[in-house]
Length: 257
Image (cartoon, rainbow, N blue to C red; front, side, top):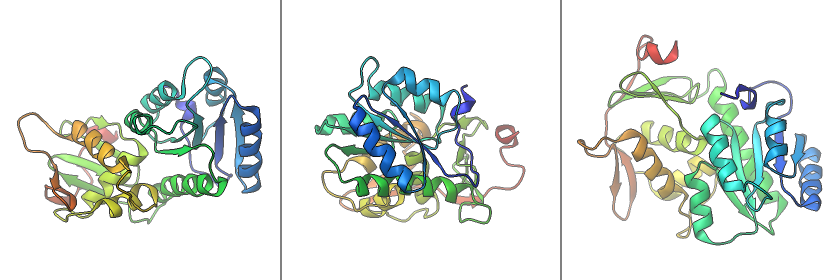
């Protein structure tokens, strides 16, 4: 485990890492995010990215897909395998839907296509960073542990434990979506509401983000012998088909020790 890439809350400005082989783009994003008060680091390829992550905590990575050597998709997959909490926004010139879907499948939180309005990228970055701070803040709405179908969702620490007490890794998008469903058990939530929960933006028919995240959550929650915990209500949205209760202080102690 490369613990150095875990972003930890503090009073210092959040650190944003720009990974792009285009020097002009690196300089542009560095200047824009620095002006907004963020600490900004930059790398031109995967090798440089790993060197920075090994020595500095990073809250958010703006990751280009078309990189020399290892591409951004495979890098996003490796980052997510090591750290479920770090934010990843893919920034690329590719416009095909399949690239967006694959990017989300491997664990990216969002996808921005070049050329883009820097204000749009900044807004999405702020949304990701706000969710991290809100989830970890004492007294926040997520400062509790909820149990459903044998699982325990720790909304303070953004962790999910299965029926054996083992942690189930979640990306930031997966956690935000699951938390929303768990906090509204039995209610049918439409894609627009879920899209706002995970990214703070309106849903459009071309946006597959919610569907991709639902598919990934089902793979982590469901078994072959029981109906899916997340059911589809055709033409309306999704709902959590399980009773939710507040977990007691001793529940899942094996997972939180």
